[in-house]
Length: 480
Image (cartoon, rainbow, N blue to C red; front, side, top):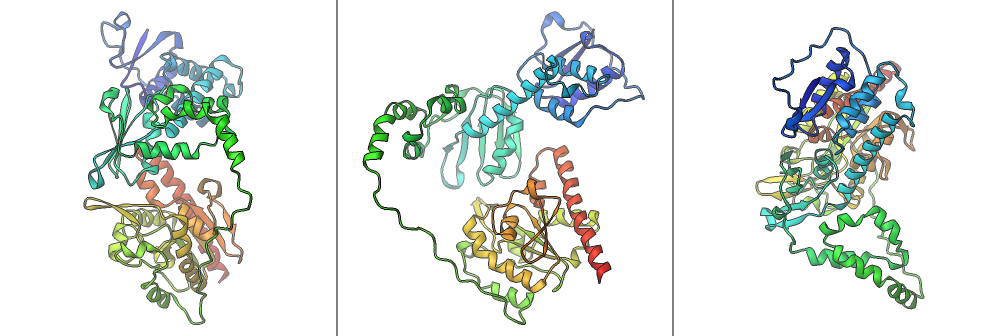
């Protein structure tokens, strides 16, 4: 019997390494016992440590689909999941198409575990409620959550992206996640007494929840399916749910009785006056004019306008999202950490940065102060629209053959509407005037990834996107 200890409940890499060695040494699933450090039952503890298996020179491969499935399913709380996954791996050696057999007991059980993990991750995204401790610049936001499975490390990056401008902690019985504005860290789990029970905005949140509750569209079973009662005890609005449901019938009647009899007047904002490229305008003239831009409020806190730079008639225009702290101080685009990441990727893709025009969709740095640190904040739609005239005038002046939108803000500016990155990236899209456009991620996205493997994988995808740019530059050079 082989006793395989894992360092933690989510130790996929150790399981993967051990499973590979076991399979290559022809150790059957029945001869393996998987344990987690600290959880070994004394009855099954070996008196002496089992010798480490050597990995033979021969090898075997499994599909990326299995690896992805196993990475998710291993987060399930089922204590036999390590054994089930190894049994499935063992069988895949002789039946490479086994994962396509949905009715197979092992396949269906692993798929069900992975589905439960993903659902639990979704519920954590939806039902974590932060409470504020302290105030102003010293504030910290703390939430309590009780996950069904081992999903905290999986779910934490979502909160780092969603709440990047605030320091937060998510406490759970298993493990706690923390964000300081730069990186996610983890500490051992705690009990609920460590979490605050309320904050100064608690009543405001309850009033808001009550105001958006629509009794006319109430479907209790559907609501409880999406928000099971077990999550209610940790939600500030939970105390309102039963009274709101009980009073839904009367509230619906009141809505009908007080219905508006005349249509509401249009609340559309008047269109902003737009400047058009004047004959003879070049990038230097536009840059000088943009120094006095007051189209939105961002200029008030920013150090200066950060305009684009590059050759007047570059064949490629790279469009980022907005200047960061370093760019705001230097007055030049992409000179900070994201710029260094971009420079490295451009070199690997075979693109000379000096031959491309580099700019941002928004020309002023939007941030929130946190002590001596200025934390980047994503521009909203009104700010993007206010600054779009500069992008349009830059493009009309440079006349690039290819525009590369890096990040969601850049894509919204280039296409004039919200554009999903993953659905659009990696292919050339024709704009209305015939100019080609390419969508990819922003270099700062790569810097925010806490997992080194994911960072390396996403960086390679980013370089692959930039290789499309290199191919277009070569094509334009041949045509010239």
